[in-house]
Image (cartoon, rainbow, N blue to C red; front, side, top):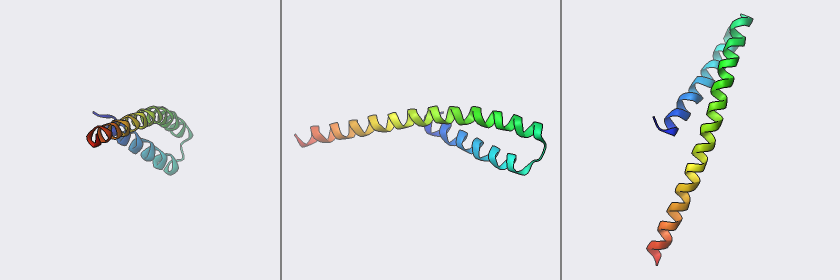
Length: 71
């Protein structure tokens, strides 16, 4: 699974948990779901940073390759 797939999956998990938390009233389950959502959000943040770095590196490589092709 690549980073984008992981990001998409975790984003879906967080959004789904948000919806579920809004729909239920049982405090214990809400607390458990919020803990799970927090874990997924933390992992999502890490992957988001990794994706940003990957994108920046790709952009640098594109510029480098363009500059080489112009010469």
